[in-house]
Length: 369
Ligand SMILES: NC(=O)c1ccc[n+]([C@@H]2O[C@H](COP(=O)([O-])OP(=O)(O)OC[C@H]3O[C@@H](n4cnc5c(N)ncnc54)[C@H](O)[C@@H]3O)[C@@H](O)[C@H]2O)c1
Image 1 (spheres, rainbow, N blue to C red):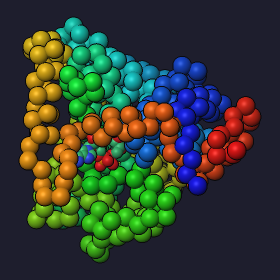
Image 2: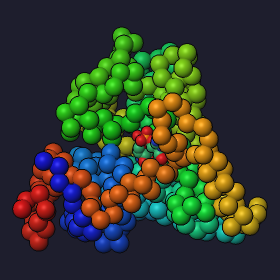
Image 3: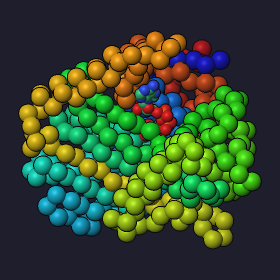
């Protein structure tokens, strides 16, 4: 049965789990914070559910990620920088890059930092929200394992490549359009698989051009290349699939070309002999200092007015509410703050496995009661 687990307990456990596999304490705290923030915002696909498959296993089993992050600034110009993450922790690299971008934007109005040789940095909105908390607009994107087929193609070429903005508002939470440029992303398919559910049709395409729905099979075939995700807008041109394809390509270009890193099929995480290898991901982070354009409070008010006017517009028959980006995450937090994160049975097993393997005996979870 799914069981709610307090966020504090999850964050402490993840911090200790990261420390146990070699991540230095402050960096372990950062990694755990990025993951737990995702759960707090209701993004279950990118929270504690990723601890084992995406971080723990890649560090200690596949050995394709370094627990100690060597953050090397390889080029530092006034408002821009290029960083090499040397396959360390993506969340640590991401946080430090956005801190640098914010610092540069304080001085120059704009700051942009790109990273090479990075690893999965978690839910993307974490970094733009840092900029919002500093009174700035934040922007980030990352490339990822090949997943999306180009329009009229069936081969997985582009990552799920999120393109995410954060804008401060007067509403108590920022605007964040926090999503992949595919209709669905792997984390959600992993979640469907854990829950024993099929993927809705139209989101995944096979080599025969037909849609696929078996979640477990899709996860395997995304790796073997037999299946690909469809871009926002869907299959073909009729519903504008080329628009999502274009945005995914923008993210690939900004993630890889500015830092001269790996791209597309080179990000498969598998070498020529079929063995796992570091992904070598690229990210970009931008901070825009609003005070260089207008008064921050005035910006927040106008931003809030725009969002409120959208939400107040006429609803479609049968719809009782219009949302704006970032609102559902805020509502999820209000709903979850006293309850904690829902942990399903498959995830409960993963947490117990990590606890036992790493001898973190002081932890007992509510689902063990
Ligand atoms: N690190 C990576 O490589 C990577 C890759 C892809 C996605 N991700 C992360 O995965 C997470 C989930 O991505 P996703 O593509 O499944 O997102 P999703 O499809 O669940 O969309 C979530 C976003 O859409 C907004 N939203 C939802 N319903 C809305 C409505 N009715 N009206 C207005 N806005 C609405 C939410 O506020 C949120 O910003 C994100 O946090 C993303 O950053 C990470």
